[in-house]
Amino acid sequence: MSVLKIILMALALIAFQAHAKDDRNLAVTQTNNAASDKRIALVIGNSSYTNSPLKNPVNDAKDMANKLRGLGFDVIERNNLQTKQIGSTLSEFRSKLSSGAVALVFYAGHGLQINGENYLPAVDADINAEEDVSNQSLSVRQIMDVLDKAKTRLNLVFLDACRNNPYASRSFRSTERGLARVSAPSGTLISYATKPGSVAADGDGRNGLYTSKLLAQMDSTIQVELTLKQVVTEVKATSNGKQEPWMEGSIEGDFCFAGCATSGGSQVASQMPVFAPAQPAARIKKSSAEIEDDTWNAAEAENTEEAINVYLNGYPKGRYTTKARIKLASLKKLSQKNKPEAISSHSATGDKPEAALWAEVQKGNTKDDYEVYLAQYPTGKYVALAKSRIKKLPPADGVQQNQNPKDMKPEQAFQTFGDMMKKFQNQ
Image 1 (cartoon, rainbow, N blue to C red):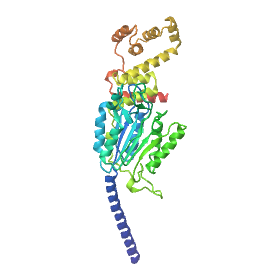
Image 2: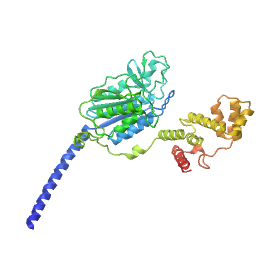
Image 3: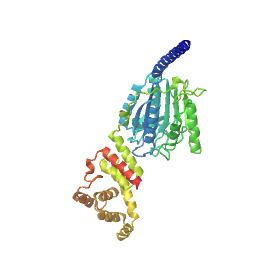
Image 4: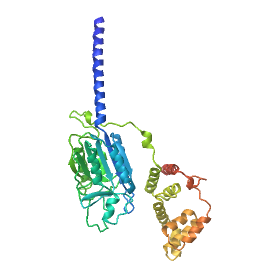
Protein backbone atom coordinates (compact mmCIF):
# COMPACT_ATOMS: atom_id res chain seq x y z
CA MET A 1 0.00 0.00 0.00
CA SER A 2 2.85 2.39 0.83
CA VAL A 3 4.49 1.63 -2.55
CA LEU A 4 1.26 2.55 -4.36
CA LYS A 5 1.10 5.88 -2.53
CA ILE A 6 4.68 6.68 -3.51
CA ILE A 7 3.92 5.91 -7.18
CA LEU A 8 0.79 8.10 -7.15
CA MET A 9 2.66 10.97 -5.52
CA ALA A 10 5.43 10.74 -8.12
CA LEU A 11 2.92 10.82 -11.00
CA ALA A 12 1.15 13.81 -9.48
CA LEU A 13 4.45 15.69 -9.12
CA ILE A 14 5.39 14.98 -12.75
CA ALA A 15 1.97 16.18 -13.98
CA PHE A 16 2.18 19.35 -11.88
CA GLN A 17 5.64 20.22 -13.26
CA ALA A 18 4.50 19.63 -16.85
CA HIS A 19 1.42 21.81 -16.32
CA ALA A 20 3.51 24.58 -14.79
CA LYS A 21 5.92 24.43 -17.71
CA ASP A 22 3.02 24.76 -20.18
CA ASP A 23 1.69 27.76 -18.26
CA ARG A 24 5.10 29.45 -18.40
CA ASN A 25 5.37 28.85 -22.14
CA LEU A 26 1.81 30.13 -22.69
CA ALA A 27 2.53 33.28 -20.71
CA VAL A 28 5.59 34.01 -22.85
CA THR A 29 3.63 33.39 -26.06
CA GLN A 30 0.81 35.69 -25.02
CA THR A 31 3.25 38.44 -24.02
CA ASN A 32 5.01 38.24 -27.38
CA ASN A 33 1.69 38.25 -29.26
CA ALA A 34 0.53 41.36 -27.42
CA ALA A 35 3.48 43.22 -28.88
CA SER A 36 3.28 41.80 -32.42
CA ASP A 37 -0.48 41.65 -32.96
CA LYS A 38 -1.47 45.21 -32.08
CA ARG A 39 -4.62 45.92 -34.10
CA ILE A 40 -5.71 49.47 -34.95
CA ALA A 41 -8.74 50.40 -37.05
CA LEU A 42 -10.12 53.63 -38.50
CA VAL A 43 -13.84 53.31 -39.29
CA ILE A 44 -15.80 56.09 -41.07
CA GLY A 45 -19.44 56.16 -42.16
CA ASN A 46 -20.87 59.17 -44.02
CA SER A 47 -24.65 59.38 -44.50
CA SER A 48 -25.88 62.94 -43.83
CA TYR A 49 -24.67 64.61 -47.01
CA THR A 50 -26.16 68.03 -47.68
CA ASN A 51 -27.06 67.30 -51.30
CA SER A 52 -27.36 63.51 -51.50
CA PRO A 53 -27.90 61.73 -48.16
CA LEU A 54 -27.44 57.97 -47.92
CA LYS A 55 -29.35 55.51 -45.75
CA ASN A 56 -26.83 52.89 -44.67
CA PRO A 57 -23.19 54.12 -44.27
CA VAL A 58 -23.50 55.17 -40.61
CA ASN A 59 -25.14 51.82 -39.84
CA ASP A 60 -22.31 50.13 -41.74
CA ALA A 61 -19.67 51.98 -39.72
CA LYS A 62 -21.32 51.33 -36.35
CA ASP A 63 -21.72 47.62 -37.04
CA MET A 64 -18.19 47.32 -38.40
CA ALA A 65 -16.72 49.15 -35.38
CA ASN A 66 -18.53 46.81 -32.99
CA LYS A 67 -17.39 43.76 -34.96
CA LEU A 68 -13.75 44.90 -34.97
CA ARG A 69 -13.75 45.67 -31.24
CA GLY A 70 -14.90 42.11 -30.65
CA LEU A 71 -11.98 40.90 -32.78
CA GLY A 72 -9.39 42.75 -30.73
CA PHE A 73 -9.06 46.03 -32.64
CA ASP A 74 -8.58 49.44 -31.03
CA VAL A 75 -11.15 51.37 -33.09
CA ILE A 76 -11.27 55.06 -34.00
CA GLU A 77 -14.88 55.59 -35.14
CA ARG A 78 -16.17 58.64 -37.01
CA ASN A 79 -19.72 59.03 -38.26
CA ASN A 80 -20.71 61.85 -40.65
CA LEU A 81 -17.16 63.19 -40.91
CA GLN A 82 -17.01 66.95 -41.49
CA THR A 83 -14.30 68.82 -43.37
CA LYS A 84 -12.81 70.32 -40.21
CA GLN A 85 -12.42 66.83 -38.68
CA ILE A 86 -10.35 65.27 -41.47
CA GLY A 87 -6.95 66.45 -40.22
CA SER A 88 -7.48 65.53 -36.57
CA THR A 89 -8.90 62.12 -37.51
CA LEU A 90 -5.85 61.22 -39.58
CA SER A 91 -3.55 62.52 -36.82
CA GLU A 92 -5.25 60.35 -34.18
CA PHE A 93 -5.03 57.30 -36.44
CA ARG A 94 -1.35 57.98 -37.17
CA SER A 95 -0.52 58.37 -33.48
CA LYS A 96 -1.86 54.89 -32.65
CA LEU A 97 -0.03 53.04 -35.41
CA SER A 98 3.36 51.47 -34.78
CA SER A 99 5.87 49.33 -36.60
CA GLY A 100 4.69 45.72 -36.78
CA ALA A 101 1.03 46.50 -36.04
CA VAL A 102 -2.00 45.44 -38.09
CA ALA A 103 -3.84 48.47 -39.50
CA LEU A 104 -7.36 48.47 -40.92
CA VAL A 105 -9.36 51.23 -42.61
CA PHE A 106 -13.08 50.95 -43.37
CA TYR A 107 -15.06 53.65 -45.17
CA ALA A 108 -18.71 53.71 -46.25
CA GLY A 109 -20.24 56.66 -48.08
CA HIS A 110 -19.90 58.61 -51.31
CA GLY A 111 -16.66 58.44 -53.28
CA LEU A 112 -15.39 59.88 -56.53
CA GLN A 113 -12.24 59.97 -58.62
CA ILE A 114 -10.58 62.93 -60.31
CA ASN A 115 -7.44 62.53 -62.43
CA GLY A 116 -7.12 58.96 -61.18
CA GLU A 117 -7.17 59.98 -57.50
CA ASN A 118 -9.91 58.75 -55.16
CA TYR A 119 -11.65 61.14 -52.78
CA LEU A 120 -14.13 60.50 -49.95
CA PRO A 121 -16.15 63.74 -49.52
CA ALA A 122 -17.01 65.10 -46.07
CA VAL A 123 -20.75 65.30 -45.38
CA ASP A 124 -20.65 69.12 -45.36
CA ALA A 125 -18.65 69.38 -48.59
CA ASP A 126 -19.87 72.16 -50.89
CA ILE A 127 -18.33 71.02 -54.15
CA ASN A 128 -18.91 73.15 -57.23
CA ALA A 129 -15.54 72.81 -58.98
CA GLU A 130 -12.72 70.26 -59.19
CA GLU A 131 -10.58 72.36 -56.84
CA ASP A 132 -13.17 71.98 -54.07
CA VAL A 133 -12.88 68.19 -54.03
CA SER A 134 -9.36 67.89 -52.60
CA ASN A 135 -10.03 70.63 -50.02
CA GLN A 136 -13.25 69.11 -48.67
CA SER A 137 -12.59 65.38 -48.92
CA LEU A 138 -10.50 62.69 -47.33
CA SER A 139 -8.08 61.50 -49.98
CA VAL A 140 -7.33 57.78 -50.27
CA ARG A 141 -3.76 58.84 -51.05
CA GLN A 142 -3.57 60.51 -47.61
CA ILE A 143 -4.60 57.24 -45.98
CA MET A 144 -1.99 55.29 -47.95
CA ASP A 145 0.74 57.77 -46.97
CA VAL A 146 -0.13 57.36 -43.29
CA LEU A 147 0.07 53.57 -43.58
CA ASP A 148 3.33 53.70 -45.52
CA LYS A 149 5.09 55.95 -43.01
CA ALA A 150 3.87 53.92 -40.01
CA LYS A 151 5.73 50.79 -41.24
CA THR A 152 2.86 48.59 -40.12
CA ARG A 153 3.19 44.85 -40.68
CA LEU A 154 -0.07 44.47 -42.55
CA ASN A 155 -2.71 46.88 -43.87
CA LEU A 156 -6.32 46.13 -44.78
CA VAL A 157 -8.43 48.78 -46.53
CA PHE A 158 -12.16 48.34 -47.21
CA LEU A 159 -13.89 50.93 -49.41
CA ASP A 160 -17.67 50.70 -49.66
CA ALA A 161 -17.56 54.04 -51.45
CA CYS A 162 -18.70 53.57 -55.02
CA ARG A 163 -22.29 54.74 -54.77
CA ASN A 164 -23.63 57.15 -57.39
CA ASN A 165 -21.57 60.34 -57.61
CA PRO A 166 -23.67 63.14 -56.02
CA TYR A 167 -21.64 65.73 -57.94
CA ALA A 168 -22.10 64.14 -61.37
CA SER A 169 -24.10 67.14 -62.57
CA ARG A 170 -21.05 69.39 -62.12
CA SER A 171 -18.91 69.90 -65.22
CA PHE A 172 -15.76 68.17 -63.95
CA ARG A 173 -13.58 67.42 -66.95
CA SER A 174 -11.50 64.80 -65.13
CA THR A 175 -14.21 62.91 -63.24
CA GLU A 176 -14.88 59.25 -64.05
CA ARG A 177 -17.45 56.77 -62.81
CA GLY A 178 -16.72 54.88 -59.56
CA LEU A 179 -13.29 54.71 -57.92
CA ALA A 180 -9.87 54.31 -59.52
CA ARG A 181 -7.26 51.62 -58.82
CA VAL A 182 -4.74 52.51 -56.13
CA SER A 183 -0.98 52.05 -55.87
CA ALA A 184 -0.80 50.72 -52.32
CA PRO A 185 2.16 50.38 -49.92
CA SER A 186 3.82 46.97 -49.58
CA GLY A 187 1.85 44.59 -47.35
CA THR A 188 -1.50 46.24 -48.15
CA LEU A 189 -4.70 44.58 -49.29
CA ILE A 190 -7.47 46.82 -50.66
CA SER A 191 -11.04 45.58 -51.06
CA TYR A 192 -13.52 47.67 -53.07
CA ALA A 193 -17.27 47.21 -52.85
CA THR A 194 -17.27 46.89 -56.62
CA LYS A 195 -14.74 46.81 -59.43
CA PRO A 196 -13.06 50.07 -60.54
CA GLY A 197 -15.31 52.32 -62.58
CA SER A 198 -18.50 50.64 -61.35
CA VAL A 199 -21.19 51.62 -58.85
CA ALA A 200 -22.17 49.76 -55.64
CA ALA A 201 -25.63 49.42 -54.09
CA ASP A 202 -26.50 51.21 -50.85
CA GLY A 203 -28.61 48.19 -49.85
CA ASP A 204 -32.26 47.69 -48.98
CA GLY A 205 -31.75 46.63 -45.35
CA ARG A 206 -29.74 48.05 -42.46
CA ASN A 207 -26.39 47.70 -44.27
CA GLY A 208 -25.02 48.18 -47.75
CA LEU A 209 -24.83 44.99 -49.80
CA TYR A 210 -21.02 44.69 -49.70
CA THR A 211 -20.71 45.54 -46.00
CA SER A 212 -23.47 43.13 -44.99
CA LYS A 213 -21.63 40.24 -46.68
CA LEU A 214 -18.26 41.34 -45.26
CA LEU A 215 -19.60 41.47 -41.70
CA ALA A 216 -21.05 37.99 -42.08
CA GLN A 217 -17.66 36.53 -43.09
CA MET A 218 -15.40 38.17 -40.52
CA ASP A 219 -15.87 35.56 -37.78
CA SER A 220 -14.28 32.85 -39.91
CA THR A 221 -10.86 31.31 -39.22
CA ILE A 222 -9.65 31.30 -42.83
CA GLN A 223 -7.10 33.62 -44.43
CA VAL A 224 -8.36 37.10 -45.22
CA GLU A 225 -7.84 36.59 -48.96
CA LEU A 226 -10.20 33.60 -48.91
CA THR A 227 -12.64 35.55 -46.75
CA LEU A 228 -12.79 38.31 -49.36
CA LYS A 229 -13.25 35.79 -52.17
CA GLN A 230 -16.26 34.47 -50.30
CA VAL A 231 -17.58 38.05 -50.04
CA VAL A 232 -17.22 38.41 -53.82
CA THR A 233 -19.24 35.23 -54.36
CA GLU A 234 -22.01 36.32 -52.00
CA VAL A 235 -22.32 39.85 -53.42
CA LYS A 236 -22.39 38.66 -57.04
CA ALA A 237 -25.05 36.06 -56.23
CA THR A 238 -27.25 38.52 -54.33
CA SER A 239 -26.99 41.23 -57.00
CA ASN A 240 -27.43 38.79 -59.90
CA GLY A 241 -23.99 39.75 -61.16
CA LYS A 242 -24.62 43.50 -61.20
CA GLN A 243 -22.08 44.17 -58.44
CA GLU A 244 -18.68 42.49 -58.15
CA PRO A 245 -16.26 43.42 -55.32
CA TRP A 246 -12.64 43.93 -56.33
CA MET A 247 -9.38 43.21 -54.50
CA GLU A 248 -5.90 44.66 -55.06
CA GLY A 249 -2.50 44.41 -53.39
CA SER A 250 -0.88 41.58 -51.46
CA ILE A 251 0.25 40.67 -47.96
CA GLU A 252 2.92 38.36 -46.61
CA GLY A 253 2.05 35.54 -44.25
CA ASP A 254 -1.39 34.61 -43.00
CA PHE A 255 -3.98 36.81 -41.36
CA CYS A 256 -7.41 35.72 -40.16
CA PHE A 257 -9.84 38.01 -38.35
CA ALA A 258 -10.81 35.42 -35.74
CA GLY A 259 -7.54 33.46 -35.63
CA CYS A 260 -6.31 31.12 -38.35
CA ALA A 261 -7.28 27.44 -38.06
CA THR A 262 -4.74 24.66 -38.58
CA SER A 263 -5.55 21.53 -40.56
CA GLY A 264 -6.69 19.91 -37.32
CA GLY A 265 -9.20 22.67 -36.68
CA SER A 266 -7.39 24.42 -33.81
CA GLN A 267 -6.39 28.08 -33.98
CA VAL A 268 -2.84 29.25 -34.60
CA ALA A 269 -1.79 31.18 -31.51
CA SER A 270 0.24 33.80 -33.40
CA GLN A 271 -2.90 34.95 -35.21
CA MET A 272 -5.31 34.92 -32.27
CA PRO A 273 -6.80 38.38 -31.60
CA VAL A 274 -5.38 40.21 -28.59
CA PHE A 275 -8.14 41.96 -26.67
CA ALA A 276 -7.41 45.30 -25.12
CA PRO A 277 -8.56 45.87 -21.52
CA ALA A 278 -12.32 46.36 -21.54
CA GLN A 279 -13.60 49.88 -21.05
CA PRO A 280 -17.37 49.40 -21.12
CA ALA A 281 -18.23 52.76 -19.60
CA ALA A 282 -16.35 54.71 -22.27
CA ARG A 283 -17.87 52.67 -25.08
CA ILE A 284 -21.45 52.48 -23.87
CA LYS A 285 -21.83 56.16 -23.04
CA LYS A 286 -23.12 58.12 -26.02
CA SER A 287 -22.61 61.76 -26.83
CA SER A 288 -25.58 64.10 -27.04
CA ALA A 289 -25.13 64.20 -30.83
CA GLU A 290 -25.30 60.40 -31.05
CA ILE A 291 -28.41 60.34 -28.87
CA GLU A 292 -30.03 62.91 -31.17
CA ASP A 293 -29.03 60.79 -34.20
CA ASP A 294 -30.64 57.72 -32.65
CA THR A 295 -33.80 59.63 -31.76
CA TRP A 296 -34.20 61.03 -35.27
CA ASN A 297 -33.38 57.70 -36.97
CA ALA A 298 -36.00 55.95 -34.83
CA ALA A 299 -38.60 58.66 -35.49
CA GLU A 300 -37.93 58.64 -39.23
CA ALA A 301 -38.18 54.84 -39.33
CA GLU A 302 -41.50 54.91 -37.42
CA ASN A 303 -42.77 57.57 -39.89
CA THR A 304 -45.76 58.73 -37.83
CA GLU A 305 -46.84 62.16 -36.63
CA GLU A 306 -46.44 61.07 -33.00
CA ALA A 307 -42.87 59.85 -33.58
CA ILE A 308 -41.80 63.00 -35.44
CA ASN A 309 -43.31 65.15 -32.68
CA VAL A 310 -41.29 63.27 -30.08
CA TYR A 311 -38.11 64.32 -31.86
CA LEU A 312 -39.28 67.94 -32.32
CA ASN A 313 -40.29 68.22 -28.66
CA GLY A 314 -36.92 66.95 -27.51
CA TYR A 315 -34.88 68.92 -30.05
CA PRO A 316 -36.77 72.11 -30.99
CA LYS A 317 -33.54 73.49 -32.48
CA GLY A 318 -31.95 70.17 -33.44
CA ARG A 319 -29.91 69.29 -36.49
CA TYR A 320 -32.84 67.49 -38.11
CA THR A 321 -35.55 70.01 -37.21
CA THR A 322 -36.09 71.18 -40.79
CA LYS A 323 -36.37 67.61 -42.07
CA ALA A 324 -38.71 66.77 -39.20
CA ARG A 325 -41.07 69.68 -39.91
CA ILE A 326 -41.20 68.86 -43.60
CA LYS A 327 -41.86 65.20 -42.79
CA LEU A 328 -44.57 66.20 -40.30
CA ALA A 329 -46.23 68.48 -42.85
CA SER A 330 -46.26 65.66 -45.37
CA LEU A 331 -47.77 63.22 -42.87
CA LYS A 332 -50.43 65.69 -41.79
CA LYS A 333 -51.31 66.50 -45.36
CA LEU A 334 -51.65 62.82 -46.15
CA SER A 335 -53.85 62.14 -43.13
CA GLN A 336 -56.06 65.15 -43.91
CA LYS A 337 -56.45 63.99 -47.49
CA ASN A 338 -57.86 60.69 -46.25
CA LYS A 339 -60.53 62.41 -44.11
CA PRO A 340 -63.92 63.24 -45.68
CA GLU A 341 -64.02 66.65 -44.04
CA ALA A 342 -60.66 67.53 -45.54
CA ILE A 343 -61.97 66.71 -49.00
CA SER A 344 -65.03 68.89 -48.59
CA SER A 345 -62.93 71.73 -47.22
CA HIS A 346 -60.66 71.46 -50.21
CA SER A 347 -63.62 71.73 -52.57
CA ALA A 348 -65.09 74.66 -50.67
CA THR A 349 -61.93 76.69 -51.17
CA GLY A 350 -62.02 76.44 -54.91
CA ASP A 351 -59.55 73.52 -55.04
CA LYS A 352 -56.65 75.66 -53.82
CA PRO A 353 -54.14 73.55 -51.79
CA GLU A 354 -52.82 76.45 -49.67
CA ALA A 355 -56.28 77.69 -48.76
CA ALA A 356 -57.41 74.13 -47.95
CA LEU A 357 -54.43 73.55 -45.66
CA TRP A 358 -54.97 76.92 -43.95
CA ALA A 359 -58.61 76.03 -43.31
CA GLU A 360 -57.59 72.80 -41.62
CA VAL A 361 -54.86 74.56 -39.63
CA GLN A 362 -57.40 77.02 -38.23
CA LYS A 363 -59.64 74.15 -37.15
CA GLY A 364 -56.82 72.61 -35.14
CA ASN A 365 -55.60 75.99 -33.85
CA THR A 366 -52.41 74.57 -32.26
CA LYS A 367 -48.80 75.57 -32.58
CA ASP A 368 -48.00 72.36 -34.46
CA ASP A 369 -50.80 73.02 -36.94
CA TYR A 370 -49.54 76.51 -37.69
CA GLU A 371 -45.94 75.31 -37.99
CA VAL A 372 -47.06 72.68 -40.49
CA TYR A 373 -48.47 75.46 -42.63
CA LEU A 374 -45.28 77.54 -42.25
CA ALA A 375 -43.13 74.59 -43.24
CA GLN A 376 -45.27 73.86 -46.28
CA TYR A 377 -45.76 77.49 -47.38
CA PRO A 378 -42.84 79.58 -45.96
CA THR A 379 -43.80 82.50 -48.23
CA GLY A 380 -47.57 81.89 -48.28
CA LYS A 381 -50.43 84.37 -47.94
CA TYR A 382 -51.13 83.51 -44.30
CA VAL A 383 -47.54 83.47 -42.92
CA ALA A 384 -47.89 86.66 -40.88
CA LEU A 385 -51.25 85.55 -39.49
CA ALA A 386 -49.89 82.10 -38.57
CA LYS A 387 -46.93 83.61 -36.69
CA SER A 388 -49.22 86.04 -34.90
CA ARG A 389 -51.56 83.28 -33.73
CA ILE A 390 -48.63 81.14 -32.52
CA LYS A 391 -47.57 83.98 -30.22
CA LYS A 392 -51.07 84.28 -28.79
CA LEU A 393 -51.43 80.56 -28.04
CA PRO A 394 -50.80 79.36 -24.46
CA PRO A 395 -47.60 77.32 -23.96
CA ALA A 396 -48.08 73.79 -25.28
CA ASP A 397 -47.61 70.82 -23.00
CA GLY A 398 -44.56 68.68 -23.66
CA VAL A 399 -44.60 65.00 -24.41
CA GLN A 400 -44.89 64.39 -20.69
CA GLN A 401 -47.80 66.11 -18.97
CA ASN A 402 -46.99 69.52 -17.44
CA GLN A 403 -43.51 69.52 -18.98
CA ASN A 404 -42.41 72.06 -21.56
CA PRO A 405 -40.61 70.40 -24.51
CA LYS A 406 -37.83 72.97 -24.35
CA ASP A 407 -37.03 71.80 -20.81
CA MET A 408 -36.54 68.19 -21.89
CA LYS A 409 -33.02 66.85 -22.05
CA PRO A 410 -31.98 64.76 -25.10
CA GLU A 411 -31.86 61.63 -22.95
CA GLN A 412 -35.46 62.29 -21.83
CA ALA A 413 -36.63 62.69 -25.42
CA PHE A 414 -34.93 59.45 -26.42
CA GLN A 415 -36.44 57.62 -23.42
CA THR A 416 -39.87 59.09 -24.16
CA PHE A 417 -39.68 57.81 -27.72
CA GLY A 418 -38.68 54.36 -26.47
CA ASP A 419 -41.64 54.32 -24.08
CA MET A 420 -43.96 55.40 -26.86
CA MET A 421 -42.70 52.64 -29.15
CA LYS A 422 -43.30 50.02 -26.44
CA LYS A 423 -46.82 51.37 -25.96
CA PHE A 424 -47.55 51.08 -29.68
CA GLN A 425 -46.17 47.52 -29.81
CA ASN A 426 -48.39 46.44 -26.90
CA GLN A 427 -51.58 47.81 -28.49
